[in-house]
Image (tube, rainbow, N blue to C red; front, side, top):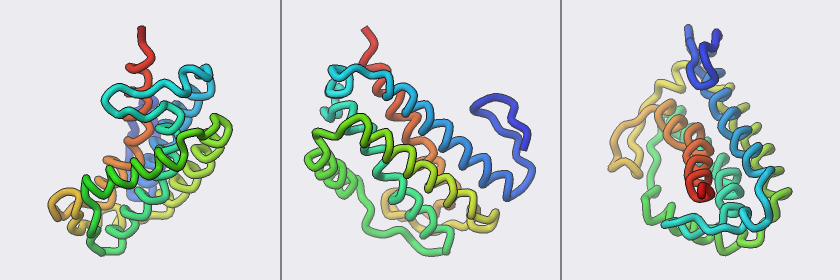
Length: 173
């Protein structure tokens, strides 16, 4: 694979695609970890506008859902539909996570982020081109048939980038 910029990859085949997706996930997790590691205690506990969760909880949240996001993509890669995943179910899961991890330490959150992002990247690298291209109905998207690749990009790969930008915006003067 030839990389033309940190966010743009030249992909020439199925194994290169899995590698590119894994690298994008790793870059996002590393960027989130680097930013979060420099936060003060006050910033770590700052609540995000609209979201309401402290920044530290959100960093831990990103780390904690990598296994779930990858599992959903693997379900599709095997040709199986994703059922029971709704916006309400995700909101409930996130609220439960926030209640259970409201006092998460920076060290614990960053350790989980490193561990789970590495495992997620390894799982992505194990996918074949046919698995990345496999499509199945996904309940979160009104049972639209979506590819494994799309679900990875829209969830596991994008997740850290999304929350990092929300955190940055919340901390800007």
